[in-house]
Image (spheres, rainbow, N blue to C red):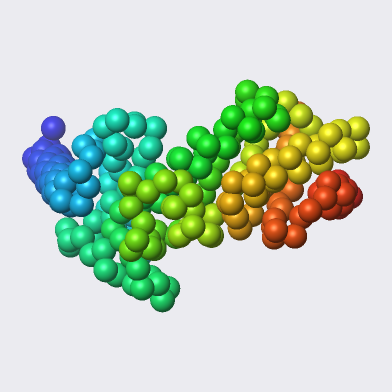
Length: 248
């Protein structure tokens, strides 16, 4: 091997070594920041809630706003997963106002707790109407872009009805795999939907929308979104919306 080639290999080796060291250093730096973000979020939760919270995961959003999203779950309820938002400079600023909202929080625990309670409450009636495979999802409309909009009165000791009175802008999704939405099942579907709406209204709940998802073919689904529930008083009203959906 010529002297020039040896020098070239040495230079390449140095460049590669420097690059490897640089990558390792960046990874160690980022890992260190993640660990600090987790510790900060844990300290924040221990000061705010009496419940023991278990760390689940962390991700960093590189798209503006750049935030650490640190996920936790209550020790006595691992199914309920919520987030704490930690700023890029490793601070928690729950007072950031988002889109004109005056009430903001760095975590969405109480929001997720409300969604969980509502899903549990509606599950039995949904299964009675659509079978055991039905999926009930409740989503409170909350962007969580910079912070979470949370009413200051909301807390995790409230009943479901007390929480619902403070959180009107939520959606309920019902997804069934056992019953197709077609001309043959139209009347039966309308009756089941109307009965479910009555369950919601009789309990004093008023979601912004209820969205029913049905299989139309083996690979496709269709949804029927019903709003203004206080104006739905008959099965025929539901039937009209189902017919409109099938006509699309």
